[in-house]
Image 1: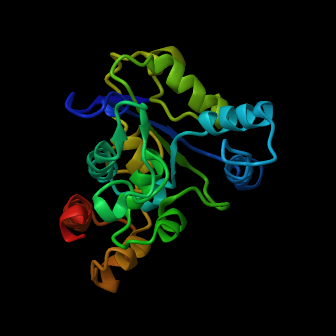
Image 2 (image 1 turned 180 degrees about the horizontal axis):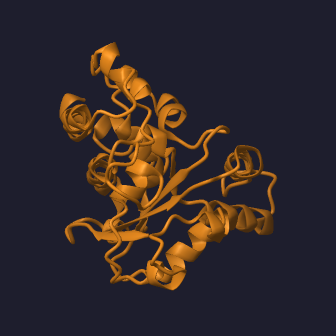
Length: 261
């Protein structure tokens, strides 16, 4: 896991972000099961449910808290910078919707420059998409029933314990699927001073040689971001020069989303 400090001017819950990569997931027993769990949690009773007991609401809230991450499919990401561009845009928008008195984020303030979605983590997924449809964003960049890898993103306060956050991520997926360098132990991955750069895991699905083939679905990103990559390049297994050029275009597109809106 990599933990990155964000500007201290942001609200306390947005002052740090944690990224953990999981690989070799079984789509049926893991990816699909996680999606079913997310859907079930979203359908649980809330404080506005008229017929729900306080205990059932508390249990549903606890389950939603356990799943409070951005669930991203790494094949739709080209680099760590791609993710962080969306993270920063989401943090700026969510800061506008922060109610300091109630210590909550106000939902549905997109028309006034605030959150378009329900949580800061779903806002990250929304920011990755060049369009303005939240559901489309989740479909394009979120975990799918066919996903074999997963990137979890978690906002926290600056004082949050990285060990606790990583463990909460492992509890949702599995420790055996956590992507870490061969020479790194789970304990080292939990260390807040760890120097692990998760960019390699995002690009290649593991920590390995830079010449490894990337896992990015460039054909899909070409379509999503309207990159106009020549088909001759898309048919090549690996084009480092092309990737560097189009990664810059993608990151700029994400960073400019608020301006374009």
